[in-house]
Image 1 (cartoon, rainbow, N blue to C red):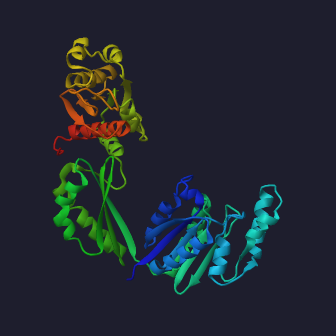
Image 2: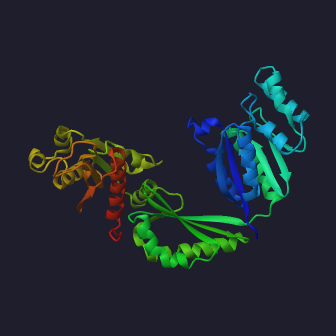
Image 3: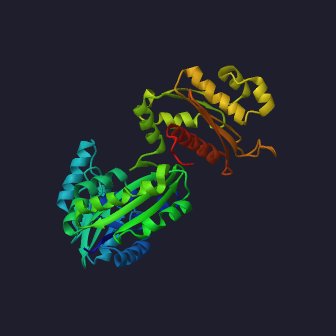
Length: 419
């Protein structure tokens, strides 16, 4: 079955100036994939008639479906409708149902329909109007040479309602599309290059209709296996069989399947085991506690935290011995071990976690340069400390440290986890 492809064109100077972020395209891409349509390209262009025309000419050479957002308002800088009228060699004509909808919309708001807004009910002859249930600008559906062109407002909630109510069902009916499925495997502890080396044989042996993507992020690397086929059940089974081969290759570097964060995976692990945790943070300044408590239901396992940024807080609240700080310093294995052990005792939890380091940009010394960070895990059986060395800038040093502690927690609860 031939793949059905789409291109998304977003229109608006405000996008190019960076005044707003184009969230529409990401949402549209995900929804199109659900009906078996693959997005080939996303293009952002200015409110310029020539740019719009050129973008349409180029998009139709690449895609079966061209989806446009933006430029449908009532003001002079909104050019999309006029450009489409000329592009399809037609003229504007009053669409009575759209006018009635506009009048009702304004009455519901307690306002009179203005002449400027009345102009929005004039649509190109030959298009199929797409009702805008939440706004004043109707969408437009054109068909030409086996291609479908759809113009929608740029306002996200208006566009999403149009897509959901009319555009996606119509596209699914118009095109015979294959099924597109995704399987996501979350990994941590191996950079993209090493993952690729380990997976080379497995990846090379994948059938042609299955493709692997490496998606690095702060938590590690998301592996996304994408499959395309005519029989959804067969495709699902085939992809699952491939995913089930991965634990033998990657071991415990896999921490979850699907769109699950490391924080969520750890929350499930703590909940399943009935364990509680407390944190003692210096360089991370509460970020570790924030990550743990960002998960719904975290009150079942997270008890409390001490942000011991100053040494006096380490001494008074966490009972780190002054001699330890004098002899080894705040950024040391001895200090961070004491912080993890004592915060566990302070809050009477099963686990204590601790961080202490030099996040930067200053504060480093020849012996302990910026990016020198100690983290620790403690339970009633053992204490594990680990030295980190980052050189990523202050905010990233803090972020990476928090994620490293979470992974240390995971490793400590599962002793077979590979480093």
